[in-house]
Image 1: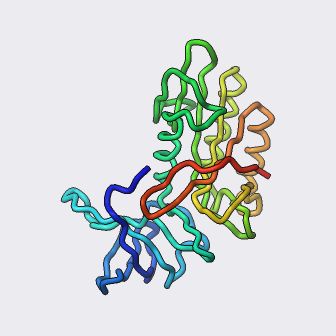
Image 2: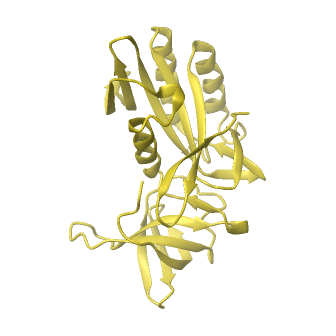
Image 3: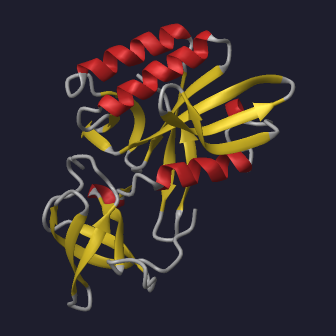
Length: 233
């Protein structure tokens, strides 16, 4: 996934109302950017951090900048745009870059399933059971090298796990795909202290046959691509 326009470097002044951020660009301009992340963004939204914005000239958009990346210690990067995860995974699926999910005849995004949900990707093939894939963007890290999900309580995430478990019980494939959108992590886990209900639901989902796959994203100011697989601990 390549960014549509070159990113602009700036300094974060503040993030507020969850979806807004004020940033001073290198040329001295102060702009308000859209922040496509409803989570807490722990460790990623501290005042004074170096961030990267994607400008646009779309007259239909209220804001001319979107916050995409934040610089971390040691030259590492994190992507704060949760929507980027689905775009990265879709490109990887279409290119056959995820061995465990390769070779399906059809890749269908945003398909209805469960009680009232949409699965991120439905993979279909005449020769094998369909695969239902739920993608989660992971950006929390509280210990060196360890990424964690979620960064706040997520009733919606628990619902997704319950519905994936139901899919698995019918003999179809059900896959939870964690995309770690920061370059300083080598493994991932569940933040059970933040959301015990989600952690318990994941245990039950895995017992029902839900597969859990995790990959790190490769992040640069040019774009984001699927990186190496990582263990879920």
